[in-house]
Image (cartoon, rainbow over all chains, first blue to last red; front, top):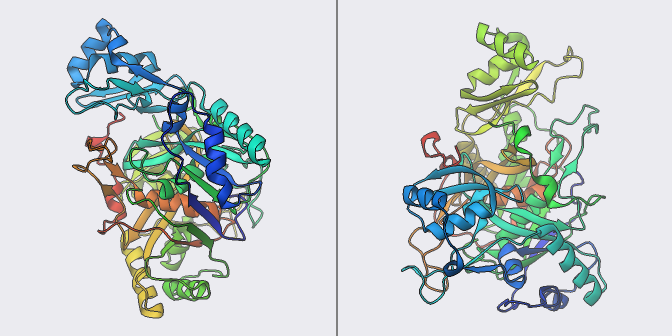
Length: 259
Length: 259
């Protein structure tokens, strides 16, 4: 953004990572997938939230969940599984919107999103007798990203930035886009307050959500988590100095300009 | 997204477009800038809203604006120029939020954004005696994009998709990202309702804001409009079939799930 590339940026899908199971050493799997591409320091590895959650064993069996009275009440109103609603409540600090088919919460991490980010795509259409498990977000996605970066450094000897990407719906606009839930090795938010533009005027746009831009760019190469490629390598972008976690992208409720 | 790239996606900044003045034939200027890159059919040209507005002469001199009583009232409360507030009101259908230093409206195009998208960066710090002009959004960005695509076709003989990109703030998250205000030659929104994922389950994420992803990807190469590169060429992404305008990305107020 603030330091436009003078060269070409490339986005390469990382195929061949394979199924990510509980306890997988995801950093090592990713390092192996990256190595044939000839990565260099400063490349950016983008990974879907879903495989990070799987590697961290963030599965919860709905059979183990006892829904509270409040969860039953909301579930009846919005036609969802009370146990899923219960989990969404446990994962969140507030319900932003509950309507038939829709439950939007503020996740404990500060993310405003559908169903507290719980991935229920493992459930079968009939309620999922075979597999009643759902997948929670990583407990600390910035820490997850730092762990992957550390693995890459250990395996390949390269300092690489890492972004964990998720698909988000948005107010006022149709369709999902990718945003960054976690990152390491780059400034998730680039603050330009006080800088001047090329004509010497104060910048109008003072903060850029760099990690979100990178997640969306990689989204073009990855496709959706359920069917797509779970990681991509972004090369040729000259990262600005500084490191800030994806947590810095969260706008505290009190500062929300749109409400 | 839905058809992940099997190959590398590249994003190349388009330098050397030069200053865009009133009445410039922007399509021809862009075609000249693209040609040395060896473009092919199916490449995607991303252009900042700012140069499109300039070419369409969307300048308004604040000296010509008489502020209404309502504009004066809002301006006093939020510490902004009453003439700028008046223009923002004229460009919009509703005020979403007015607070000191902040005016968020629903633009007539349906976009919820700061100051109805009016670019006041031409104003000097002291109020701009030399140049009191501000720049409005294109009147019909989808039509603008179609016009650029037609120019490219005429000049280079190539069917190219075009996305007009702007920087947007967002609820709940810090920092701006690029989104698509207009587009041509691609499906801005990809609707997957009824499709199954690779395991035969109905897709959870049924709509993807493809044009917004492309705008954000190009944002990495372009930098900000005020200082950056005003266009970029995205290659290697296999566009899905169908054409839908950026207007399809607008979620009608009544359907807003987040409020």
